[in-house]
Image 1 (spheres, rainbow, N blue to C red):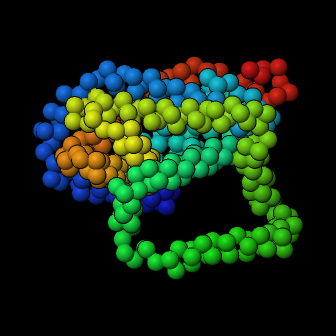
Image 2: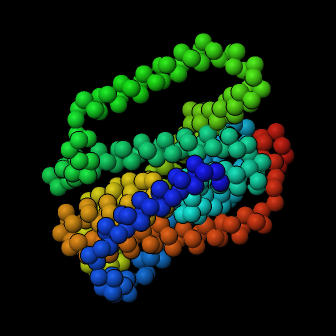
Image 3: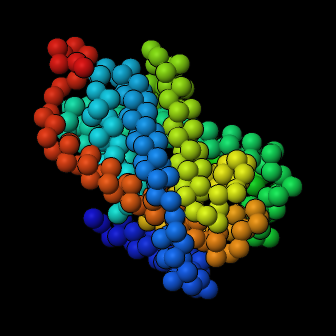
Length: 336
């Protein structure tokens, strides 16, 4: 691990620690433990089942995106790679995607850049779904949460000029990049190193563009829906597990899912701190006390983001170690 990655990891760890301190500095930890003990763990078992369904659907969806690149990995092995990726993300933020592509390359000999391009495509789809859920959440709960995001952003980030400047700057960078590639692209490819980089980028694009060349787009979108429905059910089930939160409405669960997903996507180790902060803050709008909100956020993250990830990820590592490597290129007889 180079100095840059070590620095990024330490910053991520420090951010998580700072947020955890801010969230828990006024919380009675004994009372928090009592709330965990009073939980109905039948709901946790149901949560584990629906999380496993979500993992399998994600593995199958990833397989659908890889197929147009000329490889046909099994859903079983793509799911194992997904489980491994989530586990690695607990230790090294953003390294999970690299780990799952590396695991699949080892098990199914799918080129890393092609599977990673497919990961980028499916993550893009998840961003689209999350954006739609945010819009839906705001439409349904506008009176309750209209000022929440602005409050978090702060006054200096509310300027319309700043938003417009960022947008114009981004478009400008894309245009300049396109002109540079068009003008100097061929001469750069004469360099062996740059030629290899370009070949890798083409492989990445081949994997990413699978979303436009899928043979079964209906199955892809169906499993996208399944994944997010399972995420909602996981949140709902764990809210039912705590006596203090059983009364939360379906819309409250939607809000928790949206804010929790944003928290997990934040640059902290495993969403630690950011998840607790965002979920703990938002549920207060639904009548929970600060301590009950933090308890719910901690319970959700501990079960969904830690315990079940470790259990399923560890199982994925064990099963993957017994999976012999095979070539799944479509012109091979080992396709399956």
